[in-house]
Image (cartoon, one colour):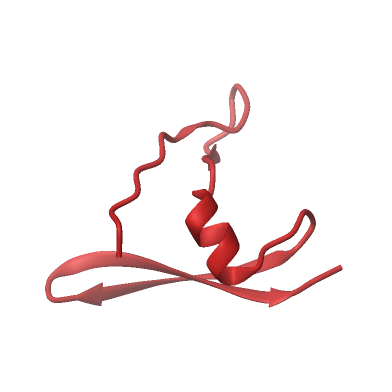
Length: 59
């Protein structure tokens, strides 16, 4: 699979939350649409911290 990079930005001033863009190839693979809900899990694989996302429902 092709390596993808995304820049992360503050969601808003005075907030610890961050936001970024989901690359188009992931949007297409998961068939994501505006308003869809995704579930995130953090796992350790081979000593690396990995974020796993899964589409859980659509509007």
